[in-house]
Image: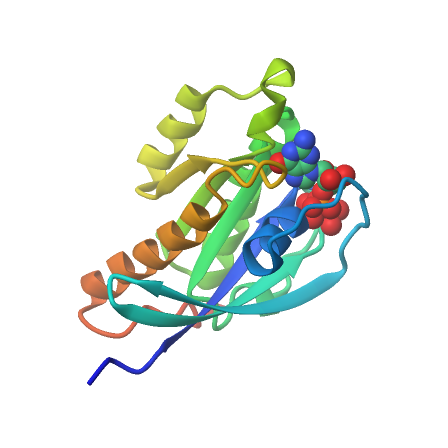
Length: 187
Ligand SMILES: Nc1nc2c(ncn2[C@@H]2O[C@H](COP(=O)(O)OP(=O)(O)OP(=O)(O)O)[C@@H](O)[C@H]2O)c(=O)[nH]1
């Protein structure tokens, strides 16, 4: 008998216009659009099979964050894993990933959450402002995964979501069983 699907809630966070919606839509619906429509919030679902296990993924595509945005509690309570997106063409968006992670850790009162750092717009390498080395260093510091992607060319898009599921499993292995839910809020 196959295992029943595991439900996993994933939040996609990052600065404005880094491609959060584009990579989510490419993953779920397999298309890309050049047009830019700022997101308020959208939830997508997709079932992904990884190493014989089915995962029912609920993906929350959030509004672009800046340093003044307040982390919505919907983006930390009941979330199993985080996709933190920057654009390789924007140093500002890379710095924003650090601020967002800090907010998540403050909010959840933990020192680690399952995370994938994503350098999107890898097709625009002539405009690169963030090196692979800098992003790799950051992900090693955070003990999390990192990948460069392009929603436009569909480079590593499925990989992002496989990695976040693996990070969640890593977290649940540490806690010995079910995925660690980041629902412990210190007031
Ligand atoms: N060249 C290139 N353009 C991209 C890529 N991903 C997204 N874009 C473009 O970047 C712009 C912003 O993309 P969105 O997916 O709306 O970005 P977002 O992060 O969801 O934006 P907010 O909703 O404002 O936070 C759009 O014009 C996209 O077509 C990519 O991988 N390569």
